[in-house]
Image (tube, rainbow, N blue to C red; front, side):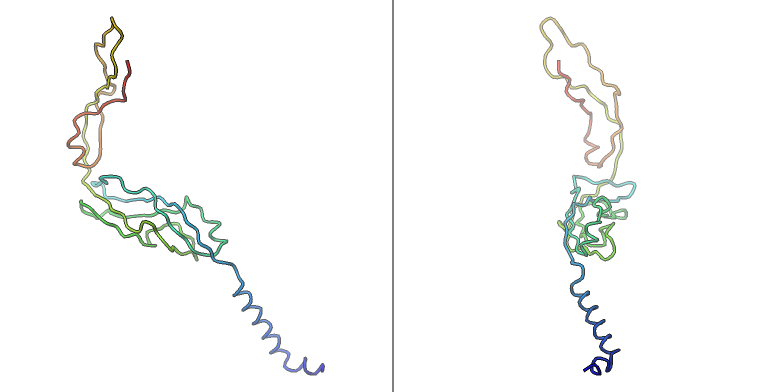
Amino acid sequence: MSNGWRHRWHLKVLALALAIVIWMAVTGEGRGVQDFRVPVDVVLGTGATLAGSPPTNVTVRLRGPDSLLRRVDPYDLTIRVDLRDAAGGDRTVQLTPRNVAGVPRDVEVALIDPDRLRLAVAKKKRREVAVVPTIVGKPPRGYQVYRALARPDALLVEGPEAKIASLTRLGTDPIRI
């Protein structure tokens, strides 16, 4: 009986080693899924700005080894949308895993929600606008408001050309009398 064990012992050791490797591969570390709220970073050219308010965050679902997902810092993740060469007008931008920055190696982007962003790119304009005090209420009997001054009396405002062109003055926060 002892002859059977020693016969071709190197093949038996190799078979045992292969069985251990296969067992480790099959029962190895589990893969998980985790959702993150990720900020959107829109990069525009120097003469452009966004009209309207785009979403500030999107949901990104990452899939990978549990140990890596536990170590992902949500503050390292961003969605980058490059519109430096975009002309003015409405744009629909398709978000892909390439737009997600800060994803660790061996972790994949499984889902981006929403996967499209509607953005309005407008020409940027800058101009000086007068500041006017906003008076609320009436003074008590026997008193009178003679004048209210805002300091500074004008501010430099920057934004989409269509909104800045129609802006004639800025009001202060209400001043209650």
